[in-house]
Image (cartoon, rainbow, N blue to C red; front, top):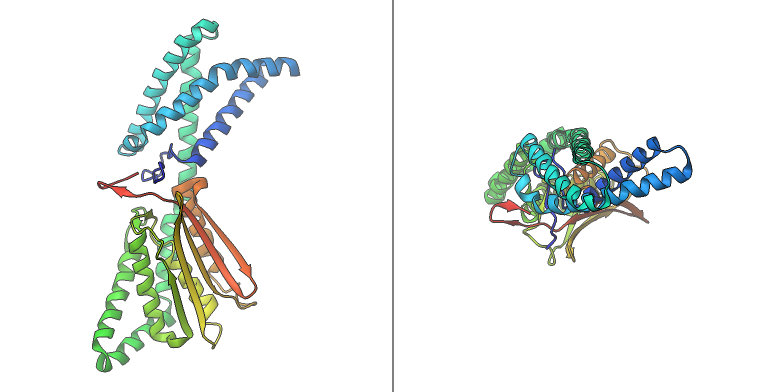
Length: 337
């Protein structure tokens, strides 16, 4: 299982995420270079200053990343401000240890270590908090967009009509359809910041496609390839269902012929892959809402998984394909890790 954790406290960075680690490494080294540049008067002076600063900053940076990663689960149990206070205290202790070891090099006072290390941590927390605020509207927009799609008049009208037509001939199926519709609304109205299992998301997708089959009949063909899917994987809700809605709206509805939607979900090493394919009809790819939904899902993947989550769209001949990649993360003992 991946050692990374899903970012439940979205304002606090996930210190076990490789994308977050890479961002921290780049930002801190850029700050070190800027400090060396401001102190230097020539290129040789710049390189010397940068080497001296790096000799002190790199051990502290790497040790901080290691300790923060070890404390990640514990930190995400606090509020953002409490976690930030803990991080600053830990960084002050690490800076004290770095100064003690660095005393043999006779480089810098303790106050200097504390000033630059605490300033850097504060800047990083501000940056990640700002980034999460910039991306977090995607959580609300996802629910609103999906809700608006669900109450699209033709969808509700046709679904209700299909249910009414079944009440006498097949009351059990009509009751199931109404339960599926209620489940859809329940998920759409829920808090999208709470994670769900892949099994629950797939069940929601099945319910949605069953409702669409009521009105599209044999035109909608669905192929499930989920025998290698880990059902306990934790994912943000409403990631797959909106993509299937796009597949129906843009791939099946425009044609009077039968169309196949295929869903492949599998685990490869420490990653979850979900590949969705549907028919592609040139000229219908710009129907309203397609690009917006894809962008929203991409933003939510970035918010939860940073560089470890991705969404790729590809058109191959007459097939439209969406490929989602996520880290494989399980929920154990009620805690996401």
